[in-house]
Length: 355
Image 1: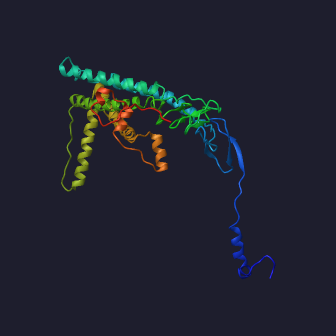
Image 2 (image 1 turned 60 degrees about the vertical axis):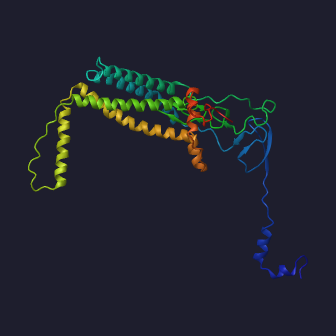
């Protein structure tokens, strides 16, 4: 017998001996020293760690994230500067063009005419005002906080903060950097090219108020333009369908539809300028109303869940669900006391940033 071996080793095959030896092999990794960006303390971490959280200040460091330059964002900024004036001109055309087109029919010196004037003025002023607030107001500035050195940063002062490589400063939880606006936005929902601005904590309520006002305004414009078009539309003359003997019901329906469409198109050529403007206002306002209604429903559903669009995407990746409650509407819109007192079961409080 060979010295250092046992009877069991002699009875096992070489493969069994090799597998038993592999059980005692352990992976040895080298630790490395790094510095926390939040408090400046030195940390000793395993070499495989790319994301870590400081035990003192609570700052999160992700070494995989780097600054990426992309030239397409310059074109996005140019697009925003071009789209916003176009949207403003469209709203002004709908307002003044609609008033000019329906003036002989609706905006008369009567009780109904005065009512329509008041409704038009309220909807026009509210839509333009909320659009201006959402477009030209700062979307949300993250809170300024001390960072970088141990004496000034206390324990937990940077809890769940991350570092923005574009702004070179701390990024609060729920804050995202918009490369189109070139700054960090608190509670960022999305970047909207039609207002040329981000939707964040400071202008989110203004953006939703603009959507509500725009949906109501386009609905009013489509109804009034359709009513005025009905009053000004010339008589539609139909031609004979010809012999109907020997044709199927499907062919008869198809021929009737073609004749109705042809008669309407012939009558459009007889419309005056006011009529053409009314037709354009009806189709444009109706199409815009559909798109804004879908966007408004999406925004209100996120508010009901207590989330933003970006937090909704991150929760889908994490497979987590937020708390769905009407209290989120109260907290988001910040109803005043004289309205909130009718909601005793709701805990009041404006939407604010928490660490």
